[in-house]
Length: 504
Image (cartoon, rainbow, N blue to C red; front, side, top):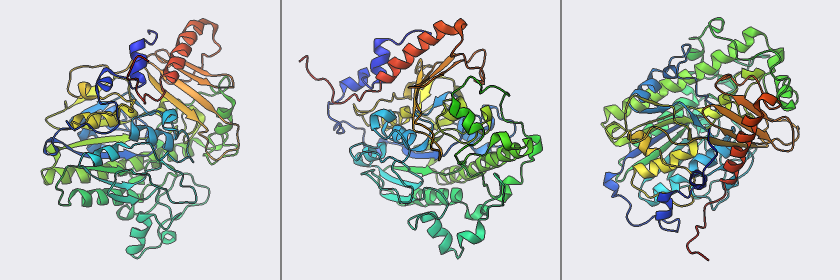
């Protein structure tokens, strides 16, 4: 494991050689590729889906034939990481190609500043027709509909989640247009953390895919970009009964938790283990059967997503659009799912929280059937799409295009990934938790600023991250080296613009 070099530092800050060669403005240069040579883009993003929930990634309990097929037709990144383990900072990051701290939308409940530029806006300015169905969540939406910035979406079918909190929720409008009332089709059984939700034909996942199919089938005169932001498998754990019935909880494994592993970890993890002061399922008070029921419902939600992904892939095939379309499948962050004795999300930097699926496919242009273990960050997706479309990557972006991996020119991408967490609490009055994390292929460090202990893991000896080595004297050199890497990586999140254009 080598210390970060100056070149790596500059690349992490967005000052790549290619970026320096571009126009110093953030406007698109005139030499963008002709519109007729550009691919369409179908960008499917689930919510809160961990990386190990796909059959082709080794999960033998779940069936995801359509996502597996997409992976067989493209490149599946097995070590893709979000830049924050909750929605707003992660989504603001991968939609701008910038780190959460740089976008200034670094926690839920904030609104992304209006001067940030989404990649959808760049595509729209380059002549793409852009649409969205489902969630966006780059602005506060608790008790209020989400306010938009100049995001570039011509069609905007907003449904933050499936529940009737806002009259602006288009999914609920669709339900009511069919003659249904939410209270009649959705009921929560008392004392249950996992249960059957609305019927499959009325599910928000289906609605999102329906909207995407309608958009794609329009008579487009230009290339298009469609963002499909499905709420599943975000909690509550409520798949349609048809999918929940596929699973026998007693045939599923228990969460990956070792009794006593939280003893030398940050105190808030023990609090959340007991679900004190927040909405989490209380791991410490659930029976093993109840824990497996949650896993069953979570897996069922993902199978329901897969079923609908199959619908839209079939439509692309049947209409001859598949060869002209880049398809991305990913998630914004992961889910603890009882691992480490905790559920949901929050200030957690475990792989189950930060490592997500990322599959990119473009038949005839990108390699197919490839599993890449390169370390990649979700903020690399936006510059990858621009690069594939022949649109120059603006200087302000900090991500690095994945094009050379997708085309087989290289196998590696980064020597480390960086993630940060600020105030990422789930309905709790606990003190602020501020964390910066760096991860290589062999080690991980999480610095909990202003508090001890932090977290240090030897991923070769302990891939499940159960043994915290923060206070281990035998690992003092590893801790020092990783702390230096984490500090350098955090400094490298500085905004790369305005660019330096003269010696003085």
